[in-house]
Length: 470
Length: 74
Image (cartoon, rainbow over all chains, first blue to last red; front, side, top):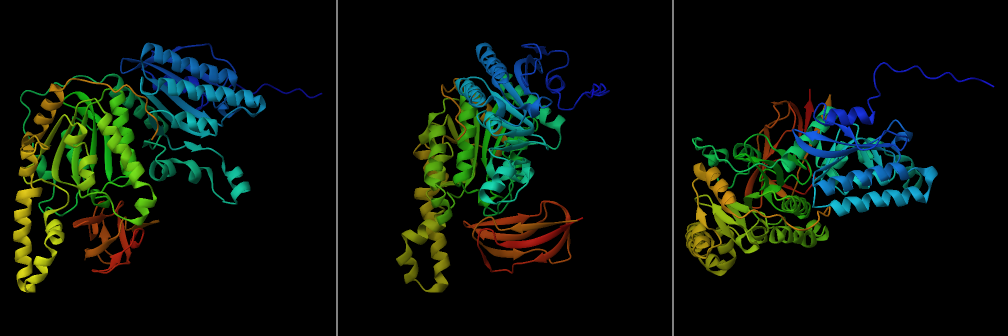
């Protein structure tokens, strides 16, 4: 019989140690374990983040790769139910290979109970996931059911790993390609925020908790200088631009952008405006011309519903030429997925103010929080166009015969003249004001104060619904 | 040394080509301006580098996914 010597005690803790990870997540000295540490593969604790109380759990990757069994799952369910009872955010730090194989279907049942607990809490308390290692199989759907998924560089999320994929479909792929940060941050949209280090992932989680748990109140600075935000747009009306500097100048500091690389033609950012947390939804003309498409409509819909569920007011910045036309879009379900954005805005009870900076056309006009969907207020910058389509395009269709009848040399002049008339009657911002779909034309330099005033004056609300991961 | 491939995101026509092969570019520089949805849409680099090859000419109609340029990142 051979004797096995005990492994020497390591001088530094295992970087995967759940206690260490939770300590690094909470405010220093605030952590209290909910239950004594055991071999269950999960550690749960309460603590604070910038002073706000939070409950968090962390899978223990040092025990069987963090695989989830009955006892570990019970700890997670307890943590979520505790957070729900106390109305505080629940944070999951994930590094887990999935259900414990040895426990068989009992483990699957327990993992299912974790999912059920997450859905019970959905829309009632913010749920944030930070994926630091593999989160495979059952562990993949844990983060996926939550409001916000943050992934560090070693994060991997997939239902079935590379070996199973290879044996079933013959596809050769590594873990990173299958479910790493680039895959989920850019292609699938499973992950909202990708970070370049584990500490940054934990810090981003803290930022999200602070934005959602300590939302603050609107407190406009008394003597704030007016900034001409329209200077951030190109002079030529038809030139596309990046909307992010506009958002950055509107918000107090840099916000937390969700899905920056997934469906980038819509920007969704949580940040603070005059001291209060708001959600910004903005078309981004530099990507796909700012068109809405199936992916961006769905991304925005989920963001709007999350903000509504947690009482976060919305600022909607509109510069949209329409829905992206094409066979690909129709087959991709742009009608079904675009309908989600209509549903999300129409359902939302949080204050939500729309600003049309340059143009808002067609079906996309409605989808971007139009008056008809119940916008709290709709503002427009001078010269903005609100119409079924651009005036020139519209008269090209409406007056096709008339235009064809004149000599080619005079056609352009007539076209411009007709467009001007049409804009006056049907397309310009004046018509939109007359019929009440735009409340007011605001000067770009006054934009921030007007947005804040409108949001602050509206009765606060909070949607009574879950946050299904659309 | 990585090569960045820049593809068209949507059906569009090439309105202006602003750089030639061999030109050094900074992150965020405009390579070409496309025309689509009655808008002029600049196509930018993500990283600094040197333009290796331009695969489009002015007036050309592009489909979604067509290669516009390759940029060698230092």
